[in-house]
Image 1 (cartoon, one colour):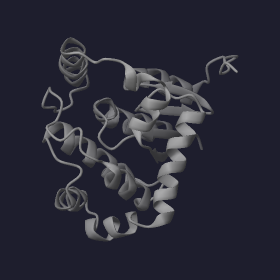
Image 2 (cartoon, rainbow, N blue to C red):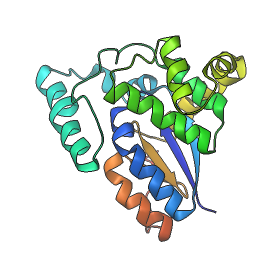
Image 3 (spheres, rainbow, N blue to C red):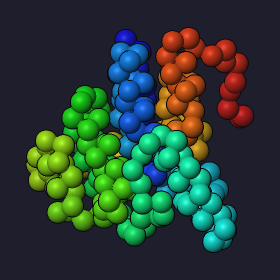
Length: 208
C-alpha cells in the first residue's frame, strides 16, 4: 500500500482548496494518508519568510484573487477573503487531529471539517465550542478529543511534526510526501496522483 504523508495546518487555505481532491486521489490509489498537522508559523519563521513585508497588494492577491480562482477551479465553497479569526491560535485544532489518529476515515473527515469551517464559514478555530461543533458535524466526540488533545504526548507530537517539516526543508502547508518525494501546494495534486502510479525520476537533494 502506498503511503502519503500529509503535512498541513488546520487553518491552511490552500490545504482546504485541495482537501476534497486530495482525499479522492488517495482513495482511488488505495493509498494510506498519514496526517502530520504542524505549526505553520514556526515553519514560515524558519524559512525566513516572517521577515518579508506582506503589503496589501500581496495579501489581496494570495488571499483574494489567487485563492478565489483556485476555489472556483476546484469547486470549493469559500468566503474569498482571509477569515476573520485567521490570526488566532489553531493549536488545539491541530492537536485534536493528532489525538484522532494519524490515519483513518475519522481523521480525514475532521481535517476537512476544520479546513472547510474556517474558510467557507469563517469559523474561529481557537474557540472550544466551535471545535466541539465541527467535530460533532463529522460524527466525532469533540469534548473527548479536546481533552485528549491537551495531553503532553500530543503536544510533543505536534512539536515533532513541526520540527520534522523544518528539518526536511518544507516550505508550507499543504505538503504531500509520496515515497519520500515532497510536493508543496495543492496545485501539485495532479503530480501527486501521477507519483502514486509511477514515481518521478529523482536525483534532487537538499543543499548542505
